[in-house]
Image (cartoon, rainbow, N blue to C red):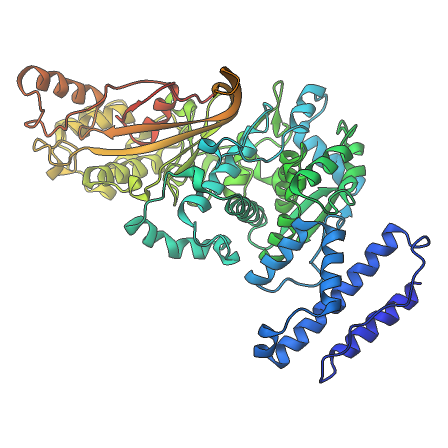
Length: 624
C-alpha cells in the first residue's frame, strides 16, 4: 500500500508540471474497512502536499489567472479532508502562515510531530525544574494551569490564573500579549512584528504620536489569539538567542484535536488528559514530544495549531519546558548562580526569579541588576544583559532586599511584571510617554547610573572614595570642599548621604536644588492586572438576585509625581501651601483632585517613579 501511495504522489507531482491544468487525480477505490486511521492520515497528508505543489506551480506560471481561478474539485476535497485530519486550528494556521511568509516543508507540522526526550535529558529537565522530593501539590499546581483569556468583558485581554505557582509564567506572557494588543494592534497579521528590529522601528512612532485604547472589551478573539502566539514565538526565540525555538507538546494529544469547534477540541483534549499526571522524569519522558524550528513563520504556524494544547490544563508547564529547551539545559545551568536549586521554589511551588528572567530576557539569571557584578577572584553575579521589551518591578526593592536595574525599570514599552513575595502581576500604561524624563529626572538617572557602576557592595548603596571621585568627574558635579571632606571622611560614601548633599546643591553646580519649581508635576494613568480569579457579585435580573462571577482584577490608578526630590520636602510644601497658598502656585504645585491612597503596589510604583502619589476608585489593587 505504501508503494502505491508513493506512486500516486509522484504521478500528481508530474501532472502538476504539465502546461495545462490536469484533471483532478482520483485514487483507486479503497476498502474503508481495511484502511486504518494512521494510514488514512498519511494518505491525506500526501494528497495535501501534492495539491500544494500544484497550486505553487500554477501560481508561478500565471499569477493573474491563479488569483481569479475557482478552487478545483480535487483541491476542495483535499482541503476539507486535511482540515478534518488536523483540525480547524491547524487549517487556520496554514492560511495565516502563507500570508506572513513561506513555511518550510520540513517544518510544517501538526499536533502529532516531535521527538521524544532522551531519558537523561528528561531526568535533567525534571530535576532542574522541580528538584528532589517535590510534593504532589506542587506538581498538581503546574499540571492544572492553562493559558486562557478571561471571559469577562472588562478583563478579556488578560490571562486567568486558577492555580498558585505558574503566575510567573502567565504574568510574563501577559506582559508580551499587552505589548502586541496595545502598541501593535494593526500588525498582528504580520509575522515580522515579532522581530525586535521591527519593534525598534515602531518605537519612535508610537512614543511620539500614539496612545493605546482602553476599550479592552472591543478586542476580538482572533486578535487575542494572534497576540498570544506572537508573544510565545518572541519569548521562545529570545530564549534561543534568535536562532531557534523548541516547541514541546504531549504525545497523548496527537489524535485528539481532529476537527470540530473550539469547544469540541477543548473537550477532546480534556478527555485525552484524564488520568495523566506528571510525577517523575519517566512520566515526562513518556509523554513529552519536542521539535525545533529555525523559522519564525514555521514556529508561528505550529503554535497557532497548538493553541488548544496550550489552553489545556498542561499549557503553562508545556510553555515553560519549551522555553527551557529553547535556551538549552546546559545554558540554563550556566546562567544560574546556584544550579543546585530547583527553578520552582519549595514549599509552595512559586516560579523563581530565574524563570521570570528567562522569559523576559532569554537568560535564566537570578538577579535583577544591570550587567554582572564582579566579586573578585574571578567570581561574578549575573544580572540582566541588555535593555528589555517589557520590564520588571519588585516589592522587595522597596524593602531594600534587592536593586532593580534600569534595563528592567525602563523597558522599551511601558509594561512591567510586578513581583511580590509570593505572586506576579502586571502593570501597564497606554501612553509610552510616561517613560519620558524631564531635565532633573534625566540628571538624577545619569548620577544614579554612575553611582551604581561604582557600587560593588551587591546593592548595599555605598562606594569607595576613588569611585566617588570618578562619579563626580563623569557627572560634572562641583561639590564644595567642605561637603566633599564630610562625605569622604569615613573612607566610603553612602548613597543616602550623597543624595542629601545633592538636594542641597544648586542645579547650576550639578545638584538637584531648584528654587524656581519650574520642573512641574508629571500626571498619568496606569493600569494593574492581577490574573488570579476572584469572586465578584454579578447582577442577575432574571433570577431576581446576584450570583458570584469568577474573574481577574483590573484596577486603574491615577499617578502624579511631584517636582520635589524628597517626599519630606514635597509634603512640607503641601502643608505650607494649605495654610498660605491653597492653590500651591507659588511652590510650583498643581492641586491634587483626589487624596493619596496607599497599597503595596504603590511602593512598587515608587521604585520606578520616586515620590509618586497614587489614587484609585473601588478596591485597592492587590499584588498577592
